[in-house]
Image (tube, rainbow, N blue to C red; front, side, top):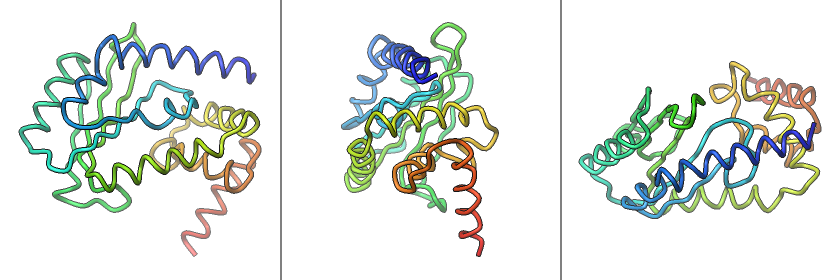
Length: 196
C-alpha cells in the first residue's frame, strides 16, 4: 500500500507542477509578493489535488486583489472562486490575511483546489516556520503513517471542515498516532478536552 501511496504522491506532484510552471501560476503570484508553495506539496504528503500558496505582501490593495483574481481566473478557468479579506474583518480560528480559493478542472477532468493566502511579513514567516518545523520532524516511518491516514480521510465529509491535514500531522508527530483507528481516538479525546 505504501508503494502505491508514493506513486500517487508522485503523480499528484507532476500534475501540480503543470499548474505551477506550465500554467505559470507561481509566476503570476510572484507579481504580488514573495511566494511559498506550502502544505502537502511542500511536505511531499499529497493525497489529493490541492495546492496551498502563501504570498508575502504588507500592503496589498483591493485593486491588486481583484487584478490577481482576474489573472488566476483567466488562466485556470475556475468553476468556483471565493474571496475573503480577514484583514478588514477578523474571523475566529482563521489568519488575518486575504484569501482566494479556486476550484478548476484545468488538467483533464480532475478537480484541483487552490488556496492562496496573502499575508503580511510577520504572518508569512510564522506560517512558513510552522511548515518548516513539520518538515524537520518527518522521517520515512512517520511519513508512511501520515500518507496512510490522509489517504483514508481525504474523502471523508469532515476533512477540511472539521479535520485538517495539520490535525493529522499533530496526531502523528506529537502524539505518536500510528493508524486511522488511533487517529479517531485522538480526535475524540481532543474534542472532549475542547468541550470540557
